Length: 296
Picture 1: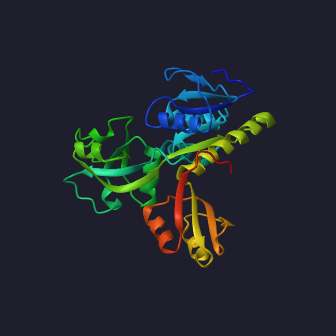
Picture 2: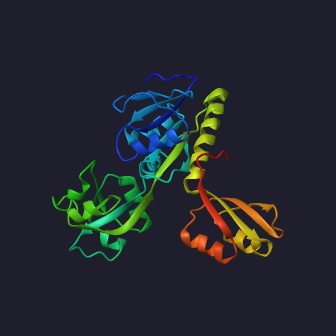
Picture 3: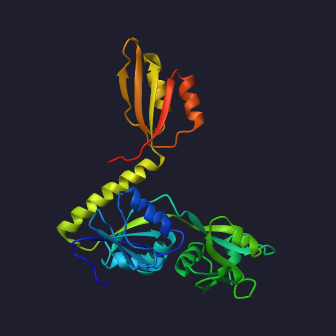
């Protein structure tokens, strides 16, 4: 695969549960992506970057070897990769808040499970042998790991293994196959990763610009802009209630001595219960606004 030395290269999943969300994140960061989903590469019109659409388990290799400066990959895939290659030349930049799932140990409905020691001497089918082996080692258990690349939930029915360890989002697939989760092995979400290879000064500057954009998008996901009015004697209590606000702006209200307008960026979700607390503390004319863009 030929890459342009004057542009950044971002590896994302070609298809699957992270593909749409990864594209959405980059679009929210202002990147206009050319090309269709059936292509291996896509050019960004308004930023010197190209997308590489590849298999999810190839993304850490691309980034670690410096073929791509950035990648978006599931934490489960990355963890399995790093356990097999501790010297991988990459680092996690940020969790992205989407693609959440859990790698769970599951057993047939009629199986007796009394903790990890119940696995001793059994067979465990999984697509994540290194993560499962670490789980077994951490609990001092010896079991046989049966590596499978798909249809892991069929292993007990086919008598390939007595237990499985697989990704679970809703649990519907486990239930449909007569299985129940019995232990959490690894919690996962999509992460942004970056190569540790030397990419040169020019691309390093581009990388900083891209990270600033993505950081701004992530900061606005839960952030809200709150405006309200309050009397002077309520300011301390109201400021303490504002979720995740560090230093609100306080301005005197014209024609209303002793009353102030309070503006704040809240870094956490703002629930109706929060608004009721603010009102009870003396706030009025409370307005909560979404934040479209924010540069940190």
